[in-house]
Amino acid sequence: MLRNESIPAREAIERFLQKSIRIRVIPVDSVLEELKKLLEKEYDLVPETVEKLVEIEVRPFMDHLRKDLYAVIEYPYVDKLYRDSYYIFYSSKHTHHHRNSVRISFFSNELEEAEFLDKKIYEEKLLKNYLGYLVLRPTFPKVIGRTAISPVALSRRNFACCVAPFSATTLSDKFKIHTFPHSSQDSHTITCAETTIWGIMEYFSSKYPEYKPVLPSHINKIIQKISFKRTFPSEGLTAEQVTYAIRELGFGAMIYSRKKHKHIFNTLVSIYIESGIPVIGVLKDFNGGIGHAVNIIGREIPDASAVAVAAHHENTEQGG
Image (cartoon, rainbow, N blue to C red; front, side):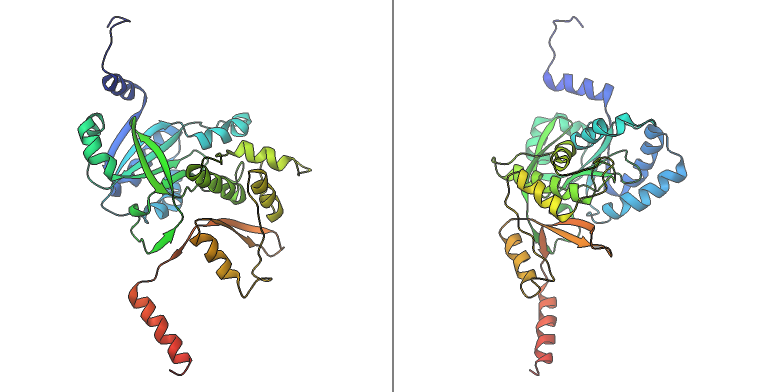
């Protein structure tokens, strides 16, 4: 083909994908076995390590998904969250660290790879069936990376939660879902505390133009202002450091403790969540420091039978 000879855009994309990105479109119940093959081949892991990694880290996540989904596995995938961690930390290590990730996109109905190149099918089928993605990063064993999964993709949906619109692409096609972002900690550049801050900012920046998303390098620069020792590898953050970072990112912050506000604590949390404001929950360890930090984003909705049982139990206790 001559240099100035033009070809249709989608054909050009298809040729590029065939040369650079490996794609597998499979039922969701085949994902784990396919991942084992990919991890062995692309990351030079021994079968025993791969088996343990997939069963302990990935399977619990996949078990929450509906069994009728289809998945699109992409490798290599450039993930912005992991690449930030890679360049500020992993790339300087003496041992080799891979910089490419794996992305798994989920759809609610059976599909084929060729459908992504058909505009009509994309508009009439794929747009409606897209349910989000899961990124697996090479930070073994903590591989669950940036994730955005629609609640509709879950096998149990008896809850209400804070959601915001998020955009994504699969094979160059653009999609949108409403969800709350998630990532596990890698214990080096982001612990649970940094992950909660990242998740909060992803949520608000997707919902309101006044806020901007942040990456681990940005959070690290903020914490360095009030830290008297190195911040990588991260040893986690105190409640005060989390509050300081949130304030620096444009929020006002309040700290509530169950011990001090025991009679109204649950009510306070519910008020924030029902207003669409996620709450950072800090669980203390035996030494009084942060044992774990999580984003509290919703509440369970009991079914009618559970409500009836609870009401009966309450009436019984009161002698009714």
